Amino acid sequence: VIFWISSNSCLQGNKMLEKRPSGLLKFFFKIPLFMHKLGFGGWERLIGAQWMLLTTTGRKTGKRRETLVDVMDYDKATDTYYIEAAYGSHADWFKNIQANPVFEAQVSRRKFNAQAEILNESDTGEMLVQFFRRKPAYTRSVMAMVGMKFKDEEELRTLGKNLTLLAVKPVSPDPSSK
Image (tube, rainbow, N blue to C red):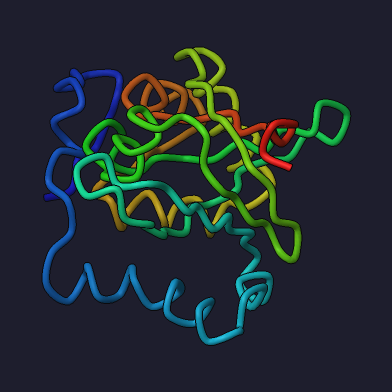
């Protein structure tokens, strides 16, 4: 189902992102993680993307769980990465970091312990627009893969109200763990 958001239509909450991928689409989304595990991390730069490998602790099993997410921006001054949770609060990794807030993150060769904070709606909309300005084709294709299309920046800002973006920051290691 493709959702087209225009000034004449209304958003239906987060329902557009409730259906997670299955079958072939789920396999397609897992390919980058498999490539990363095979030692090909960083290849995403060839398609103009940057990904963060998240290693969370399963909230039910306690097992290590890995997933790759898009890095939408990086603020060097605050050492903050901005990532998108395509399926918002429905994503297992998102639920895992809510249950266990400190997780492992890796961007390129940099590995660190991190915590995440959810961005507010206006910051999310603005972040989406800035990302779109830098990478218009990539933004449109990724949004279409999760069932969203938009005509212009204003519609993208509106979509931002229904998306979950996170600010990921490194945390200092616990001194007592040394």
